[in-house]
Length: 201
Image (cartoon, rainbow, N blue to C red; front, side, top):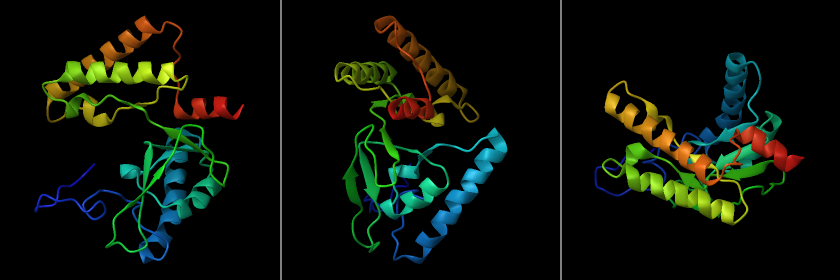
């Protein structure tokens, strides 16, 4: 999620909704470990078990937060190919670290990289192109003998403000699943945790 700066430029930090966008020297960073613990407690209270995976807002977090995540029971760090790393000086640009699916960090956690985008709400008027690009990304992942890890946000499936948005998103999702099952009949759908456990086996 991005909030666009009135001047039309984005800083890569202050204009993003990156709740974890702080580095260790900044006072706000020291509250983040507590936030991870609180989030894990809320997740467990609601679902009856702790989460084993984590996705940072805007794919932005500092590696110094990873030990706190590991301590909270987080084994799998979801994201895109590029992790946005907050700079020690918030006036400086965000740093970038590349990751690949299955990569381990110093705390034994694995990175799970999303390599397929299915975001029909961001493709208004070109839903067929969105579907085509997603299928092509699945094909590329399978050709490279890697999992196809789909990024698709709830924005695509909510209809509180716009019923057509929900209907359009669900239609694209249905077509996507049907096309994947048709082209790759042996495909298996699984959660991040399930994929991570297979990698760990």
